[in-house]
Image (cartoon, rainbow, N blue to C red; front, side, top):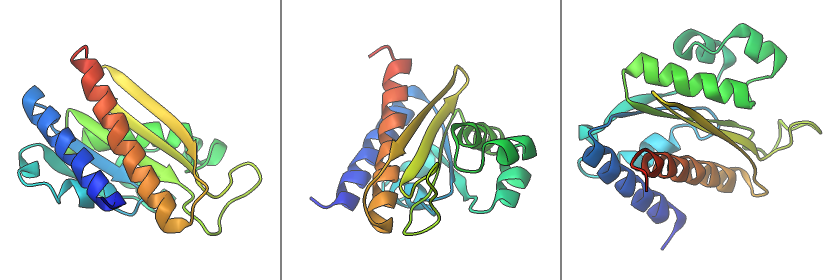
Length: 167
């Protein structure tokens, strides 16, 4: 089973959990370039729960469309827990969803610094009860980092949904 197949299986599990709980989902992606949305839409019936998403690659779009604050971008940068958290909240508000996922990072092969190396990625999930934000540093090439980030996002979503159910 290839990595995309694994992602689609995770997306199918997410669809079932969202549908069982009567919840809707939105996404905000940067470094994954829509990969999370892509694997979600590989699942039949996803339209019952997935509202849609935004690929917010530029800081300007993060601000204008998702409400990420200029202060956050200036002080912490687009690749930060703070920006990812605001992206998730912004997607949830903008698309009127119950739950939202966000991903921001440095996929590579360039763009990294000593403080923020290539592979640094933040993933967030937000719902009415709050948020979870996770930090990862992947060691792969660009495509591998994108796949790992999408997988982390879907796994975090499933974890949050299970926690909502008390599982």
